[in-house]
Length: 277
Image (cartoon, rainbow, N blue to C red; front, side, top):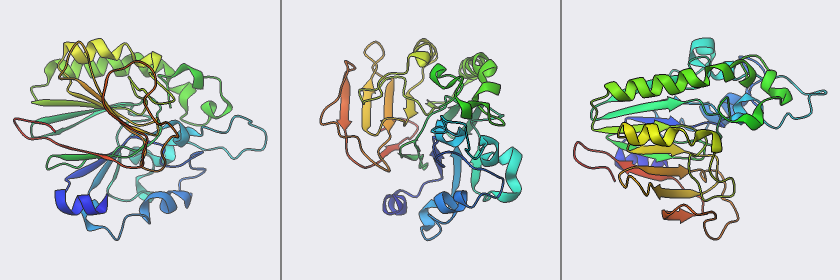
């Protein structure tokens, strides 16, 4: 990633979650430094802002037996809550309490949803983006888990799901950007082992109605490019194999894919005023 960054010179990185498995246990939990701050300092091309949303592991996923477990909170990764202990280039924009947010750049609007995903997605801008593997209030199966009740967790956020959808549609209606990109952790469409996310299917009509070009996600440990059959200009891109790849030799399910790879890697997309590739 650093090598590609040295060539493409990104303006920023977007990460779609699951930075810390089982979450942080305090504002000064050293795990954050071990998984982010100390990982990238030797790579100048990556010393840019990292716009980040949180995944289910950041909220505490895996703590399904509450007895004797250390409580964690997604709030500890949020800039608005813990800025004094987070690096200056860490900008936690999706996830609690913001939930939904927008970043605007020349020719490009980025919309961040808190779906509760896992993995990391990284945007390079000039205009380049790179995806790494990236749960939350959209996904019902996480409700009721012991870790969902941790401070700032999913239970406290599920009432805000519709507000996120309304905010997304409102901003899309007003956008005049040439390119519109929505970022979330869970894939809307995926031929990986985890498949489509049922709770996110309602977003498809919003994307088509307002001219969204890309939905970028992680969660499945694969690289995928699925083109919408009704709107060919809309792509569902999954990049979830930055840390590990699934043992899947070919795509599952029935979505028509332009590319499917169960191999370690990331995705790079270049965006200009007249094309995206």
